[in-house]
Length: 182
View 1 (tube, rainbow, N blue to C red):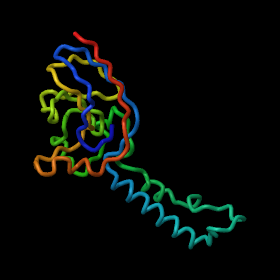
View 2 (cartoon, rainbow, N blue to C red):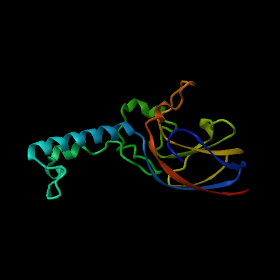
View 3 (cartoon, helix red, strand yellow):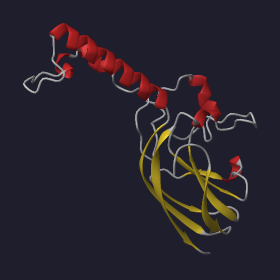
View 4 (tube, rainbow, N blue to C red):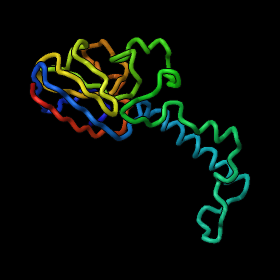
């Protein structure tokens, strides 16, 4: 599944079914910061090419710009919201753009960027039928319907653009589901 909003799984469940979810993969919930880091790295590289007269297309050249990056430059290239697995970011270390957005996450008490599941029908699941799936979860279906998946990200309450904060997400999780009928 991709981290760009709710996705239907096509897996029906009945209230009382035992659901086992196992997941892997990586997503980034801030593609913009990746782009900024790439731009910053290219800027540093170009500066060091000029300063050290590094010859880009010379097969005899053995130096590369990264050898000259300062400690500060290296530190500035570390993503504040890096790629993350299905368990998401620890709430203690995750650095959202606005701390106040935390309450607007799909499940505010669970790690940002982590795998969320819900039981819905033709429409996305309601907040009452959601559970944090993460890398592994065993749960009992609290209602009948179809399993849906997404990542724990900011929910936007504008019905014309509900997935606004999912637009800058990238990557994918693979998800394996086992349903044992009640």
